[in-house]
Image 1: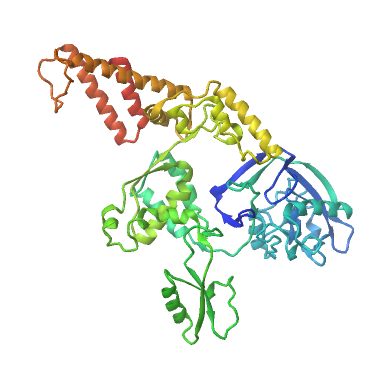
Image 2 (image 1 turned 135 degrees about the vertical axis):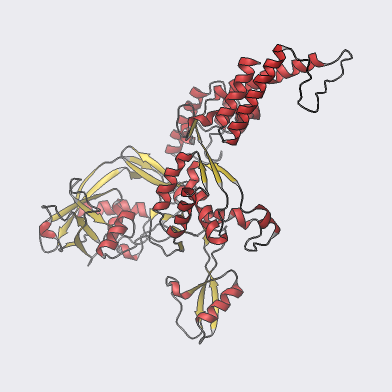
Length: 558
């Protein structure tokens, strides 16, 4: 799982930010003091047991070598064929023998030394290698991100990045450090705490998804579910055809508590919470007790203890289409009236995290798709096509566009901490870059544009596809266009009043009077044509085509 030590919980993939490092970078880490080195590749040697020969491996997470249980080489690599099946000595964990295993999936013999350290409990790829080679899985971190007893007494209790420095020092003292060099990398960071994510093995509740995913695939293929635009079917098929099991446990205060109960049997030893056979799943404590008695008919149930974890937010969100309508009572008036729905509108970035899970859970729990159409809108980026982020200073608040904002007020929003908090060196540099970016892109701030212009612009921008490169000047242009409509309408109403200057009241129907001249007939025909274009476009969810029809009619014909 993705473990955030600062929050002490597993988090979903979408809550993990990818921070790109170009090389050696010093960073602060929540829960630590000082700054720590990232973006480097550390090489060190394992000595072959009973020999002076050594095998050199490299890693960007040197502290995880305390959990190494193998070194993998390619079976066809001639450099290591004589070492197949032999053992290496772990230099920092007394008594641990490190086998040399062959693995053509994990190892590219053309890369580096052709030897790869394997830490099955703390790396997804190593985990798969561990299963293929029947390796030991040794977890070396506790929930706080400190080294536990498995990581050698010399390092036990150290925070993981303090241990990083201590491991490098220990290897250097033993003459086994072979080098430290810059290494561009992507660092996984928790989007909420900014802590560095640690892959961990931890007993959690999981959902087997592939069968449910197959139902979602079948729904799009037979036309029962339509994705708009249809190009998103490619992503849909890629995700659902290889749908991994889903970890739904979260160690948070708020959320739907997991409906699992640990059963304590009177006179028996304490139940192992890591053994699924000691649990019952139920909607309530009363139902759990009935299931426990049925499971242990010859024993007396002493206690039921509900799992303190809560369900992943995306699981709770996946229930939304029907859980709000009286489900599981499918005869509830709201459920019968509003489920299934017709259309879902959302961003394409959560097609799998939310949309697919609503579909999977809807079909599994109700037997019906929760909706028949999904309109996936584009993601808004800045005028240069860059993702909006605080560090770039290019985040645009829609309220600032509708109401307008001065540059000075925009820059006040860049304050990352409270006035009494001292900014770290990285935060101060980030804030300075953001201020410069805002001064360049918004030298006079943002003019007041109003909600109509903002909405019109976003609809017009849907022609760009997956991403919207939002140029504020274009929103301002649509504000001016909206003003033209307003002024033209007021001018017409002013000239349509009668001789008594009473307010003009239009006919209640849209029929012609028969008194229209050629000019009036022509403009009515163009209005009818534009209205037809807009109607067709809205029916097809082609909002850019609809705005073009409106814009062209007013600007070039009226």
